[in-house]
Image (tube, rainbow, N blue to C red; front, side):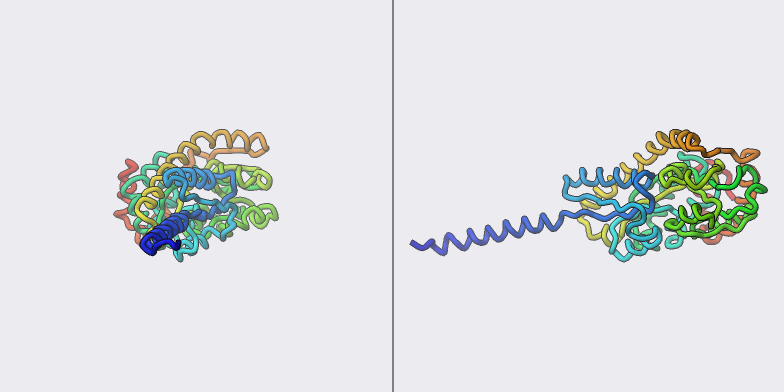
Length: 337
């Protein structure tokens, strides 16, 4: 006997609805792509791994993040453009590669603005940091959802110990394509060589440039000890590497996923600070054991500080705003300009 229509139609409809619900659930699950400029041993990777772990846990395993280190998805600046267009989900990159797109974050790259990890945390995890996040969304179409703390950018070179500005003369130093950093070296009496990050190791290896500056963690992870001999413990720039997300992709997510992203970013940020404290001293010892010679700037870095602040800061008062700079200085307990 044929089944009645009364029975088959609701049953068929239920099957269709169940299949649609299952299909919808599968469609919502996603593995987000995250670009990293550095390799798998650096601060960027540590932040990315922790974010992915936290994000997966906070979404009940529905979502994950896959990391692409070593610039596989393009240069750090390219990843900002790609994220702005919505063709890339996440990127971890040096703050100086965000400043061309959102100039206000340049406050974090002024020489000697940040003088400790505590300063870096205070600025990024405060109302000032939230303003930088909001400005970056507005200016660049990307949202900062986490921060990696990599430590001070120390100077390395292959020719001689450098403790004074006189020692710096005649050296070809690689810098990122960042005006504040370029102006800082000019204030120290040399014209640095802007060079893409992907070209830096080869540039050092082939003696196109004599030196570069980066945090100890990066010096170690990029194996610069193979092409550099001398380290100068400069403290002019504390390296901060934001985790950015495409704002269009962020807005496409439901509220619970947005919440998970922000919470995972916060957890990864806190982990990054702990990682820096735990690892940096060990890395310095390891680099010394590999033959690198570490020296301190003469006279507590006074001539480096005086030249940088007196010659570089005034150039950026209009761009960054004196009021904004003074808010940062006040938060850090320092005198206004």
